[in-house]
Length: 260
Image 1 (cartoon, one colour):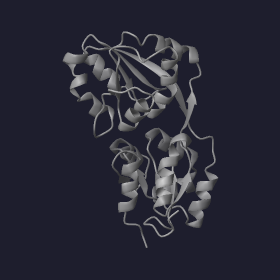
Image 2 (spheres, rainbow, N blue to C red):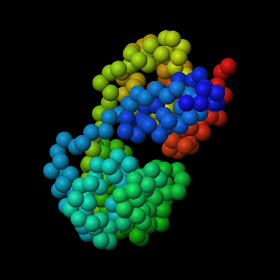
Image 3 (cartoon, rainbow, N blue to C red):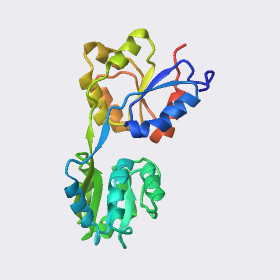
């Protein structure tokens, strides 16, 4: 740890799922900060693996497979590749570059993805997903349980036949907020990084009135405008919108005007 870095003396909560928290936590530590990993979402296997197998079995013949997140890659691709090579003619697509890298690490290349603004809206404006390109085509969206319907609704409106493969499920933390309350009371919790509106909702629900009061006046760094809006609705006052992904969050932390 760099004890003299720009984040020295700052305790920053990393709320990504535990499997994904290490890179950001390490980057914070490298800049002198103290990362506190407190996952707001737990990523779990699907309750019905036979449904996942059945969905994967229908992939051949589809034109496009859209992976919503690296979690979708981690939980679906082993099942897909266990049946044989990546299906011929099936074009992979992704919402973000982290998902592109996760696919490439497993040998799936040629992925369609936005180069900036890593969200469904940015994917939908790419020419490969225009109405003239997708009309009449079968498209499979690989995701966790639930989530936004914008991608599917828009593609269906453009004439595509859209199916889902649900390959993982999300759960909120069962508790454990005492560690946050202890740090807040001691004045040793300086900021949170939040990369999921769903995770933020879980946190607000877990906290009591005292905890929500602490949260409302703590800087919260978020990489997407939609999360920022949900944070405002939840009563948070110090919301810092950063660029996307861990790099954007870290840049936001480094640029912040921390109190002396």
